[in-house]
Amino acid sequence: MALSLTVNGERRTLEVDLNTPLLWVIRDELGLKGTKFGCGAGLCGACTVHLDGQPVRSCSTPVEVAQDKSVTTIEGLGTEAKLHPLQKAWVEHGVPQCGYCQSGQIMSAAHLLEHNPSPAREDIVAALSGNLCRCGTYSRIIAAVESVVDGSTSAANRQEGA
Image (tube, rainbow, N blue to C red; front, side, top):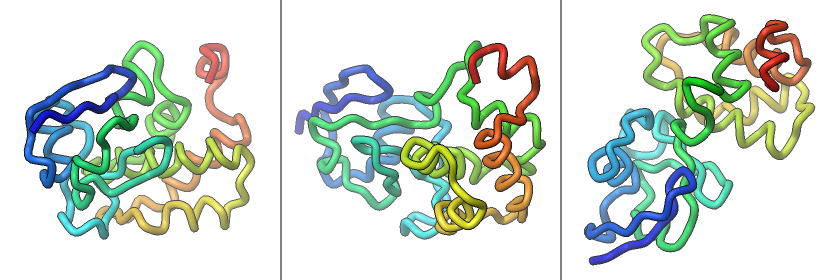
């Protein structure tokens, strides 16, 4: 069946089964590989995307829910030429080890900062508590988010408008 949605600012019309998880439409139909499959049950957060500005687990969200809505994936946050401040902070803090959960972590953190630009550490921990990291880089994840909050990213990044 035909389905229309906006992905990273681009209106798309696709022929898909409406029960297909949004994750597989993003990855297989649209070729956006930044959103990861982790658990398939919406528990780990690796597949987190924004649906009309709200974080959702795309592995357990039927694509039908996204009909006529806006989806933002990790690719929609920034570009290689102009990274999102969180993406810059992730690099500066050497957050990823395997990197598998990181797009979901960043998407959850981006939602937090959009709604609370000055969160306390406890707010950051709470906002990211649904995102699991098998490598255990939680302290670096929190430090990266805090660096965006307090503006302590590198001078070069601040000059680029981060």
